[in-house]
Amino acid sequence: NVLPACLLLSLLLLAPALLARRERGLIFNLDTGELCLQSVQCKSGCCHRTDGLSLARCAPKAAESQECSPKSIYGVYYKCPCESGLTCEADRTIVGSITNSDFGLCKDPHESSRR
Image 1: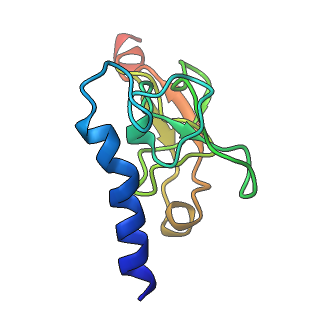
Image 2 (image 1 turned 135 degrees about the vertical axis):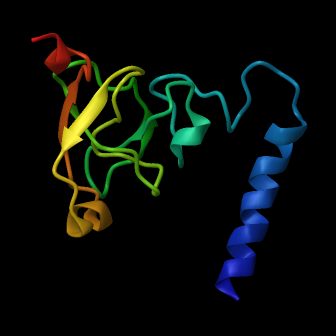
């Protein structure tokens, strides 16, 4: 019966945000530095935590040549995904995907074709 309690709590937390018609809600459209639970809540699209014990906060996406994580099903990252137009070149492994440790570097996919 833990799952229904979690679902109920989630609905109670989300209901005010879904009903509010403001530009910035309490749960969605959060600015950089605000506490988050999932990346979908952040304007930037990245809910970031520094380690497994830290609170997650909205953070900007990774720029070119910065460390990144490929898009994840978890919605919380140790390294943010790349900005629009860049790709995260990482060695994707099943273990890395599960442990959220398959980091790479943001690269411009068109850079290599220009050389």
